[in-house]
Structure formats: C-alpha cells, structure tokens
Amino acid sequence: QVQLVESGGGWQQPGGSLRLSCAASGSIFRIGAMGWYRQAPGKERELVAIITSSGDTNYFDSVKGRFTISRDNAMNSVFLQMNNLKPEDTAVYYCDADITYYSNTGVDTEHFWGQGTQVTVSS
Image 1 (cartoon, one colour):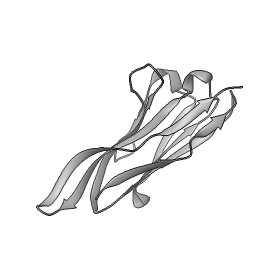
Image 2 (spheres, rainbow, N blue to C red):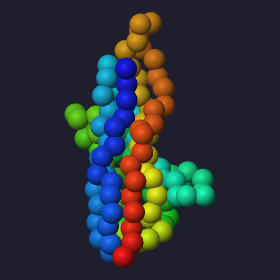
Image 3 (spheres, rainbow, N blue to C red):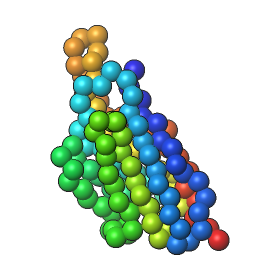
C-alpha cells in the first residue's frame, strides 16, 4: 500500500521559516512529478510548487523567491523550504505525487495525496 506522509508544519511568525517534508512509502517502482499544494479556509486548493523526476521546478507566483522545492529520489521524498513567511501563506499544505507501484497485476500508476499539514503564520 502506497502512502505519502507529510511532516514539518506548525506555527511561525511572519518573516520566519519552516521546512515541510513528505515521504512516500510502499511497494514503489518509480515516482514521477511531486508537488505541494495548499488550501486556506474558504478557498480552493492551489498549486504551490512542483518538481519533476529530473529536477525541473515551477512555482506559484506568490511564493517565487521565498519557497524552494527539492526532492531526494533515493528517499522517495519531497521537501518545501519556506522562507520569509507571510500570513497569507497560512493553509493546510498537501504533497502529491505520481507513483508507479507494484500491484497484484504487475505495476500500476496512480496520483497520491498526503494527509495534509497545517501551516500557520501569525504574530
């Protein structure tokens, strides 16, 4: 059974930093693109950053220059370094990944989501 588990959320003052981690586990054959989304209360979920299996990245405009996405393919993990945090960054953050895994029928590919981790930025 494949799952994504996030960690590293919490409270931080404006201007501070947090680092989110997300690890995939299970009978994994290969992981494609991985990313981070966020959802603030009353708003739709939005893409924050994405990283391909080869390391190419893309960011939501409001986080460019402040957030950095990275991954460790050997550890099946993706990270989000968040610097210069702002109150508007407050949200539940979710990691996602396209994962090819070993199944009873061979290999299958699905899109997986983590359970989410709360990030709160306030003074």
